[in-house]
Amino acid sequence: MAVHLQKEIDLLKKSILHLCAVVEDVVNKAVTAVQSRDEDLARKVMSEDKQVDDEEVRVEEECLKALALHQPVAIDLRYIIACLKINNDLERIGDLAVNIAERAVYLSREPDPDIQFDFPLMAEKVQVMLRKSLDAFINMDAAIAHQVLESDDEIDAMNRDAILLVKEHIKSAPEHLDALINLWSVSRHLERIADHASNIAEDVIYMIEGKIVRHRAELI
Image (tube, rainbow, N blue to C red; front, side, top):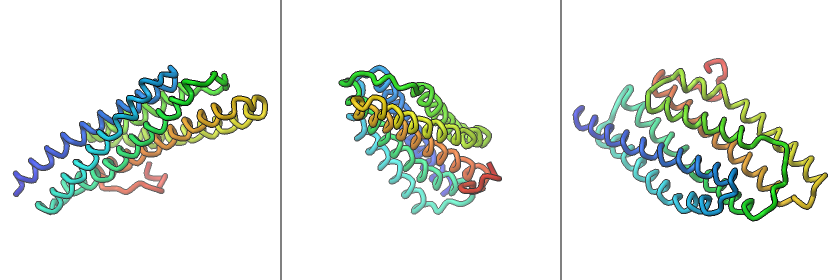
């Protein structure tokens, strides 16, 4: 049975690593679409959502099959449980990338409101968090996962700053109301991607160390 379980885990690992690559790519494209006001690239992200959904379903089916047929224990069990949870976070990140792409389509047709907030910097930091969380998962590296959790507060603060600046800009330039609301939406979706990256990091720590660190800052 151990040999068959290992084959199932190897297949699962291959599937979820492919999903990791696809999701990271669509996030990068969505961010680029906003920054370059590229409607065609944004629509490409939107068209790739079905691929992410299909991959997510396949990974879930493989996880459930391994659990049902082989009754894994210890690290194998934690790995499969972590894959189930990370799989869900990856699908949600894909959805958020589509949401950002939809905002990019709108923004590509509107004048730049020239808000004094560094969206590219926030996007870069979120992309680094996502990349590190996936690297931690791929390389089974709890230290990198802890680094991801330490970055989340900074993204939350940047999102709060964006909200304040958008509110101020709406008062001084109400003609840019729609564009500003869409920019705030981009910030909010980026903040949510960071939250899902943190979820992935927490699951990596559970998988490696067997510790649940959600809501327990002293363990981070």
